[in-house]
Length: 394
Image (cartoon, rainbow, N blue to C red; front, top):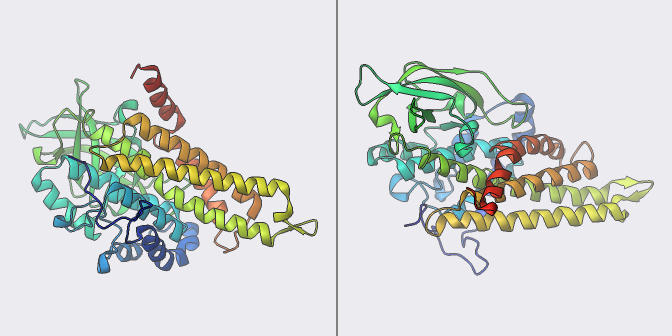
């Protein structure tokens, strides 16, 4: 049985959704988000009203519940279609931070609940997540599989024989200031791990201000768990089995879906770069007459096309009976990240300090691409995952 549902609508011969999901989300994000993207980035501002408008399911266009089953208020899309939605969201909004926040909510928190949640958990959390009423949050430090020891520990509760008490801190929590609930993986004394869903109102759950220098339009925070009670109904999946259940899924989801928006950002940069090469002059001649500029444009276009093909093919494995292996997901993430860095560097060099639109996309994307290339574990985690598979040792 496939982890995610089949596409919601007919698909054309080239494999794209018959409803043109990429064009749909690109238009919606361009109309609702792009006019304020540069200002929100300058002010490090999360716009709750914008999130609500992007979640609006009028005409079936909500972007916050693509992978939630229709019976629970979502769109019931496939993984491949969801990647297209995220590509279009980033291309239209020209906002990597906003796209990351939506990805964490709509994919990284939603899918583990869908895959491992009890019927009661799915019915409780997924409908308000799909509608945008509730925001789900997660630390990006917890999407690297078994490469990191969890920063949160769980010990048996002395007052609840089926419950636990969680202690620890998590940084880089995307969505923290506005979250209704958090997905947290904690380690037990015997080395096993359990995943939990903790509501914001949990006693002992505290939030602190903390944000990276990049992805400024994504709301960030530090999650502090000070002897937080976690009853049995807060457990996600099998107690003690997160390293075999939730963590591998989180890693695959992050490595694939958090990369999808960068396909849209690269396409937006490509258009800007082509325009700048025609409009900007060097020694009285358009940059487009320069052989080095033409080589850079060809390289930019090639990298974007190759990244799109690899990522979409990898995303499609979620719809083909399960999910991509971790080496497959790691290879896709590593390649997209390297392409994003190369494309943003080339775009910044050709367009100059200001993009033709005046929103400074080249400058912002260059900054955010550096951050993107180091999250998900970065090359230090992704390359060993791929190499271990090639060598047959992991």
